[in-house]
View 1 (cartoon, rainbow, N blue to C red):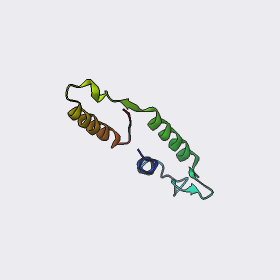
View 2 (cartoon, rainbow, N blue to C red):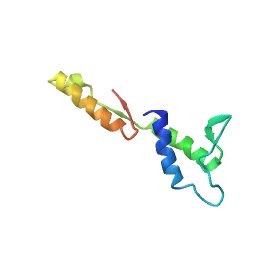
View 3 (cartoon, rainbow, N blue to C red):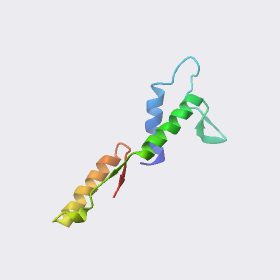
View 4 (cartoon, rainbow, N blue to C red):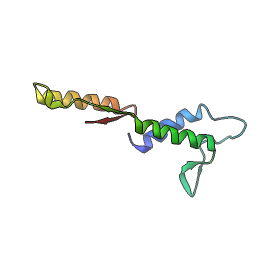
Length: 92
């Protein structure tokens, strides 16, 4: 998953949870360090979000274990794309 997609998903999640009386702009970032959110709780959630995505990797079977190598390649490729679509990582 790209960093942009991961941040987009995080910010959609965070907006639903971090609007309160303490801040009206929970997703505001530091201009000098745009990877950091000004609101510390949001920033810690972002760091945790990234770590959770990095830790989650799914191993796919080697397509050479199948009798029909050509078709198995496309099955594994399609599985990998489906797993990566919501932001998970695949090792193949």
